[in-house]
Amino acid sequence: MTVPARRALLAFLAACVLLLGCARPPEAPPAAGPPDDPGVDELMGGRGRQTVAERIGRAGGTWDQYVAWGRELFTTGSVARPPVGPRPSPPVSRWYTCDRCHNVAREDPVLTVQDPEARLRYIAGRPGMALLQGTTFWGAVNRETFYNGYYAQYHDLCVPETTTDQPVANGGPDDAGRCRPGTRRMVATSFEDAIQVCSGYCSLGRYLVRWELDALLAYFWTLEVRLSDLGLAPHDEALVRRTLRPLSRSRRHVEEARALLAGRYLRRAGDTFRGVPAVRRRPDGTWEVGAYADGRRFTGDPARGQVIYERSCLHCHDTAVSPVAGGDLAGDVGQFFQILAKGTTQSDTWYMPEFTLERLSRQQSADVLAYLRRLRQQNR
Ligand code: HEC
Ligand code: HEC
Image (cartoon, rainbow, N blue to C red; front, side):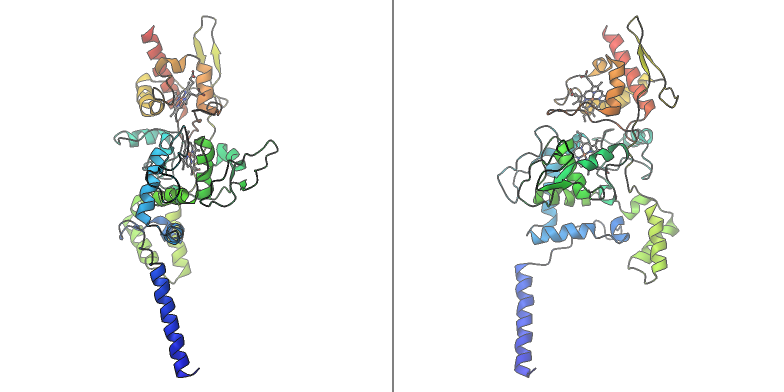
């Protein structure tokens, strides 16, 4: 290549770099939290946050703006000043917002143990948190498979084939289990798909369009698990930092450090069907609660039940969601246990999702019942 040609090429390349740089300013690194407290996904070698940040950058948005929209969507179901479409954006659901069934803060003292008894104690001093059917969004980006156990039936539900800013109508499935054109079955390991399913189905709403999904994702990335949340022993934490920041060249050391992390946070939420105890109505109209299928019986404590009622049931009952409250919830004890275990049949208005054993213990359900029965007696 001649010198002028080389110069021209260099100038051309420089212009390209400049032009590209101007057309698409490098996305400011998303607020990844305190620099000394890295996110666990990054330490594990994930690029989850980066992938969302890059897509937001390509759409011409800023991370912080999307986080704010995500929070707004989560709590109100709509965004007052959305990036595209009508203002305000059309509500995700006529009925439900996500915060009705999910917390957004840490709810379990030991991250790998989903024990509703420990959870109730843990959230006791934390205002705004409730004992709910859905798993918290704190740490949701760190989970690897969604709708497990009893909820695996949701894997048959449909999501948009690809999510764009064009709305896609709910895809069924139809009676033969097929998803309608433009939709496909959800993928159990896809966090995006899991969100679409709960928007379209659990919330009795619609699928999200691209900017909404990215807004929620950006918001959920602010709720990721960080190194300091794992409660590692000081020498383990030092080893993790030394090995993973910056990344050691020894594959073995990296694997060992990641193994230390892997067992310390929730990678899949459990969803165990709670079952119902044998319930019999005596001739005098009173109820007898017997054993569960595994032979276990529980005697309720009304004082404990009151706490659970206030921290859980009242999140929906005695509100616009359901006016039925107090002793009226225990009018039919057989139905009471059926509804806790299986929810109410999903209708086209507010319904109640079931509590799995990870969300409400059998003892807790006995306690609530004892409290509600006491209220009934007092009201006589
Ligand atoms: C009426 C209650 C309800 C509403 C409203 C609701 N969800 Fe859920 N959601 C659930 C239940 C129940 C589950 C299954 C139990 C669980 O979370 O492990 C679930 C599960 C999920 C999961 C999978 C969690 C996992 O680890 O398996 C995601 C993601 C999710 N919901 C997102 C959302 C989003 C986003 C919204 C708002 C658009 C929303 N949900 C609204 C009840 C609800
Ligand atoms: C996420 C919201 C939500 C939460 C939390 C919730 N429920 Fe419900 N529940 C509902 C809705 C909505 C209905 C009415 C459903 C319908 O009519 O189809 C309902 C109905 C019921 C019913 C049937 C009432 C009747 O006679 O119609 C019982 C019993 C019940 N809930 C018990 C409870 C108990 C006990 C708790 C707390 C441990 C609780 N629920 C927590 C939403 C909720």
